[in-house]
Image 1 (cartoon, one colour):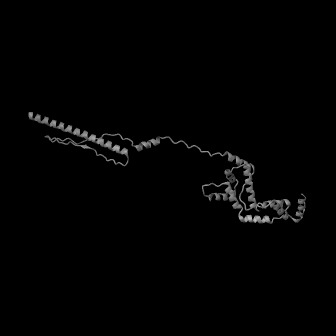
Image 2 (cartoon, rainbow, N blue to C red):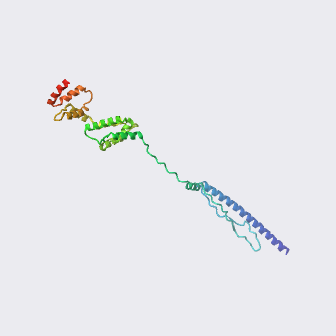
Length: 274
């Protein structure tokens, strides 16, 4: 009886020792698993390039089997991993922060700069009934328009830097197409000026052959069947193409030589008497 009681007490003591060892092993395994999970979560937050290794379920088995008379064996115990709350990484936090930002304010409306001086000059030019220019093959008509333009720009005291802008408002048809071609073919740091416009205008509408033809017409101008007033108008229109260097006496002599003989004979004595 005493031996059976001692043997039973020894078996119970061994079972308690084995259970205590299993409990300590389970706690150590749980601690190691928790540290591994925490390390993997930190690696996920640092960047997507770090691969996270999955930790298998830790199984804790009883290291020792206590032999008994009935071959008793403790079953394998599974220790569940502790639940670690997931934390959002920097990318997720940034995405949520962008969504929470307020929309940008609307862009302010940009109003065009109002040039009061140019507007005033435009009104003055319009009040002077400046005609539009659509291009022509008549050198006299082109010259008349150019003279009218220059004279009216001078009257309203238009500065050179605004003269070209003001002139472009009166170009129409073939004239505006011609000037746009000049602008597109212009290269260089300097902008086109009103002086450039006059030079190109003379080159376009007063070529050398046209000037030579008008000069020849002036040299052979005569009254014919025209009245004195009509003859004077034609004479003055052609004299602008004769060039400079002609004195006033030569012009008077030229005008009288082109008149009809009967009228010229009446004008010569009157001129001498005056």
